[in-house]
Image (cartoon, rainbow, N blue to C red; front, top):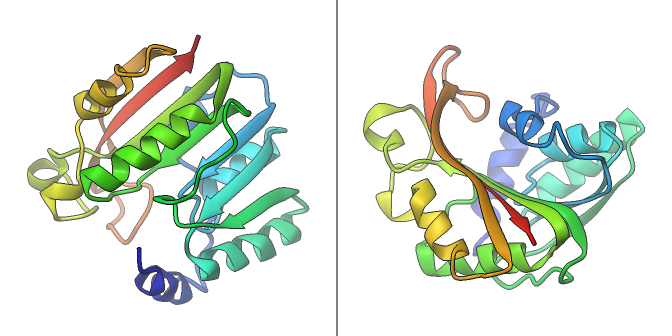
Length: 203
């Protein structure tokens, strides 16, 4: 993937505060004891900051060096310890069975590339750990606001679970399409986005 588009996007966000985490992340991890977390497609760190504040030992990975440098700076200002990595997630292979939580939020790629990232993310979850995948649902094109406008990079929960079902060590715990007020991007206040949310646990 070419990261220059995303580098420019994060340069344009220089005056914005990225500390508002996803409420989906908060809800879907509320029952977990903070241990080791891997935040994939972390951007400039909004979810990584939240996890670190809850006591998680966080590794945040993104392919935009501008986003990572911005995240590092803000984490230091907040007094948070986060391990940052600049990686193209299509080729990045995290250490297997090493994380109690692996989160993958709003990564939209053509399916063949995305499924590689998804498989590697699943492989990184240790026994008893949780995989959390969140993205704009395909129905967001017609019924929601924001997000990619290319249907080829949007997924439904059943697309994700269909892929994870091929991995016998994972058990799907939650797979739903949900509507929420937009909480990231350039959408106007009060607009609605439709997200697919999938949570799985490694047996």
